[in-house]
Length: 446
Image (cartoon, rainbow, N blue to C red; front, side, top):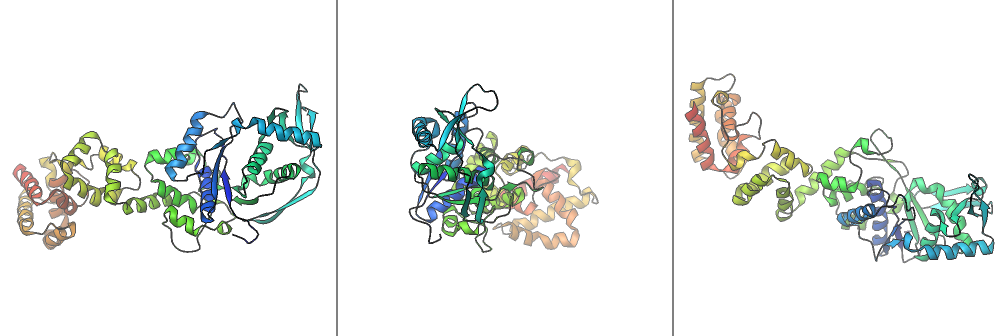
């Protein structure tokens, strides 16, 4: 933090409850949170719900739930603009009395009067912590409207009053708000408010560099939660959209992000939302979780019958989790998809095996019988310590006789499926006794 910046730091996140919590808004909240916590400051939440027609309670609840899920904890109770009307009216009336604002005819229907800010028509310059010095000639703004009438202030006035009353020291928001800054600085000067520091962060774009929208996939935090992303992974990903710690490190906890965060290392250019990178990052976070944390998450995504089977045989359930599921998924919803496709059922119960499918396409029933007998004999004395020890025992024979002719009937006998994980993993999961029993079942069919 620059020497000119004063402590204590107070930041805020000020969403309008007119939609679910967007990932772009979540990143704005995250940057405010990280900056405040890095400097031992305070992070406030303000609900800008003065638009009575568009503001919905369910959207506010979604925003609060999303922040809670992500671990972006605000200090104190949320401030709601709908509950502060009297405060805004007080400032508005003082501005009218001082000549800083005045009543004017509404330009469109002439049916009422609006309150306009009396623009002093001066040049406004401010230092942006990311973009450096920015200047505006406010003449082109004219006398802009700050209230619908004497009782109904609009966004710019309400935001400035709230920032002033809550002692906001740093306003960190999207670059689309840069054009709002000169109006708000003029209002600050008119009411005697101290100017906060500004930092305008880059927008998040889709891979085609268009505005990120639903046509590119999920865009709300609640959707990513439903899909099965971990909150730590989404926070990690969002932090690196437009900010870089200056190292090659990519996997962070929120505590590590707080320690490393530097607002002046936020880039100026737009950040591109890469879904594949998010999936990779989520996979890394999944695999880092302790077994007692990840197991309930996976079980919750399994159909009831498989969940019951996993509880009934905890050893197989744990092996399926460690050796199969975590090796294949990037998000938790893939657990359900794989289960529905029959990718797990054969671990817990013997599959149906069709006689005509046991023989490899280039093999014969006689050769396949011989191979199954040999496989069973080898496995009787093989170590089942890991898939690798099983593979080491069978590989010399498979290489000698032909991998397809040996490993196809072996794998099919275990899974009953045309496609499945390698047979060594299946054998390791179900154990030596069940492996040999299934091989014997296939042999008997031939």
